[in-house]
Image 1 (cartoon, rainbow, N blue to C red):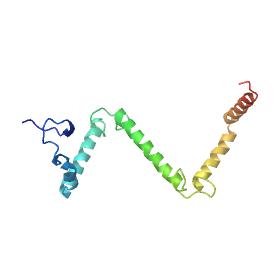
Image 2 (image 1 turned 90 degrees about the vertical axis):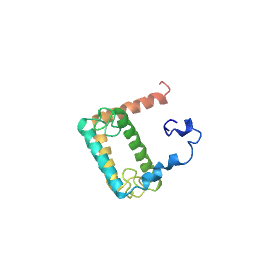
Image 3 (image 1 turned 135 degrees about the vertical axis):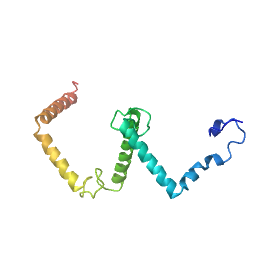
Image 4 (image 1 turned 90 degrees about the horizontal axis):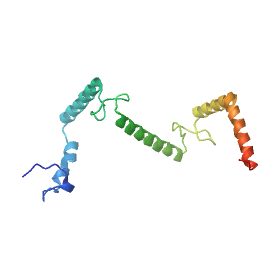
Length: 151
């Protein structure tokens, strides 16, 4: 009889799906404190070795090209971070908090006092910038052309 590869959905053995295959998670959760400490130390050692050798610290397979990660792990982490930040911002907006930091909002606004002042400074800087004024004039000219039906 061959060795089971724990691929129970495509298993060649009749008695493979029996519940004991899936008990590994419960065994992992019910480890002793010493086993937990050993695992943490092992993971730290493995991370430091990968970092020292220039290997991706996430998958430990490819050369690190973006900081401590390979291209695939870097993209995966960026997507995860973007999804998490959008979830947090949605939560803040639904609960009437500042969508930038989650602080208390200025009455009648969507941002806190700190971010409101930053936005006001940015508006002033935009109006002072020559390129912004030029873009505004160009936009209003294009708007005029489209209103006349010439565009």
